[in-house]
Length: 146
Image (cartoon, rainbow, N blue to C red):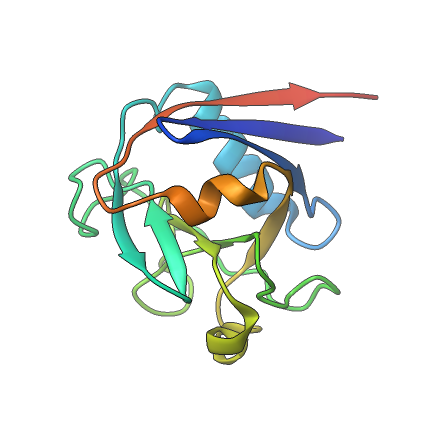
């Protein structure tokens, strides 16, 4: 099982991944994190009561890792509740490195089974409410347990 800590300028969020429901998405995110891809990137999009988005190397929402991954939408945990991590994309099967953290279930139900949910914040949920556009992901630490 893998977990992660998203260390930001506003605090640390601990994440448990939905490895059973989105194994390839979790692997992709963890591989990028382990390579340091996310270190120093900004949260380039913050929409109150909706999402906080990061993972763009350009800081604009236009960049990615240089490849695309397929969506994984059929698992049990494909519902955008507060604190869920989900893949951003520009259309089905076009995700790569950009992800968002859900701020409110009220405004995100339409994303269910359209964007891959791949984890959820289990500690530090209050941090996501403090993040503002331009805040930095200092690093993402991935932990593997048996």
